[in-house]
Image (cartoon, rainbow, N blue to C red; front, side, top):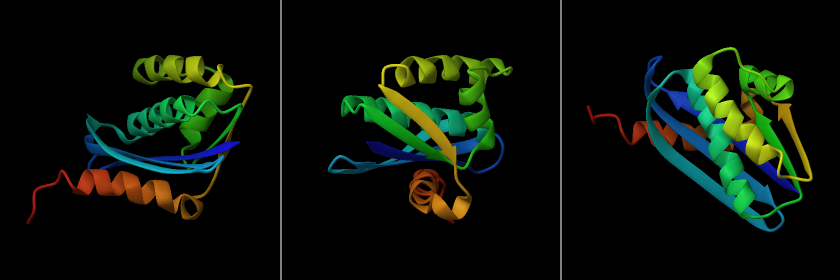
Length: 132
């Protein structure tokens, strides 16, 4: 089983945004920290999930467990629906990938249990900000 921890970070809303993905399990410990452009905080969280699933899929696991501190992302995946058009477009890709796993589930976790993904997301944003 792979555990995929995801988080998004923005400076401003919308503003410069980064994602963090931490994948562990089945002998893997992978970290991804990427600047993704300018987005809202919620959009950034959806993009983090999509990116995390894309990376997990490359490892061909049967079981994927995602941990997120975003309740809106969790709710959208559980309902398989997002009213917001921007979220819905990303969610469509998320569901297409999640449906390829034998077993896929998500769990909401508090911020203090998502420190690795949060640090990666924040690092991606900070690298892009002008030095003062």
